[in-house]
Amino acid sequence: MNINTNFLNTKKGFTLAETLLTIMIIGVLMALMLRTINRVNPDKDKILFIKAYHAVETAVSNIINDSTKYNQTYLSEEDRTSGEYDLHHDFRDAPYPEATVNYISGGTQKTKTNISRAAAVCYFMVDQLNTLGDVNCDSNTGITVGDSKVIGANFRTSNGVCFDNWYGVTAAGQVDGVIDPNCEGASSGYVVRVFKDGKITVPSTSTSNANQSKAYEWLQKQAEIK
Image (cartoon, rainbow, N blue to C red):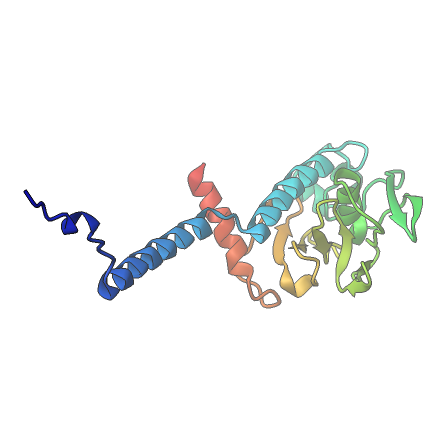
């Protein structure tokens, strides 16, 4: 009996249409995966900003409540405006003359007292945060990071974030400092507003910082999660 075994050797490959369809499906799946990965992949600027913001919150709270820096005997606004300045100090005034801060300048460790109102928040933050390299809290002319000068930077922390424009506490006790995650200059960072009583906030817009709304949104979303 003869048995036809040709069908056992029959090989069937993919047609061109099937191959193209398979490639298209793989492409769609890859696109969906990339979108998911991008959502999961953290925004470096966001992480650095939020960490720095909370570090500033803690530092400013410690500063304003430190009896070695500012008088803690609070009176009413009427008492203050009548001239009782020695009994009500906050960021509107210079700290105690004997208040001390240690910092690096020109590669040398230095100690400073008689800190001005304009420079106080900046210098005391340096005492609270881990800084890297030189500090300049007596102006906003900037510090040198690597081979270039960062305009407006007063100091840089150990995680590489620059703090710009923290010199200049006003007579009202307010300062609009900048957290600059990439140390590219004050205009590339995000404004953080500190008030006389130590409260801080992130404005929703800024005339000098085009991406300010991003920082505002980051903090708003974080508040919603909590």
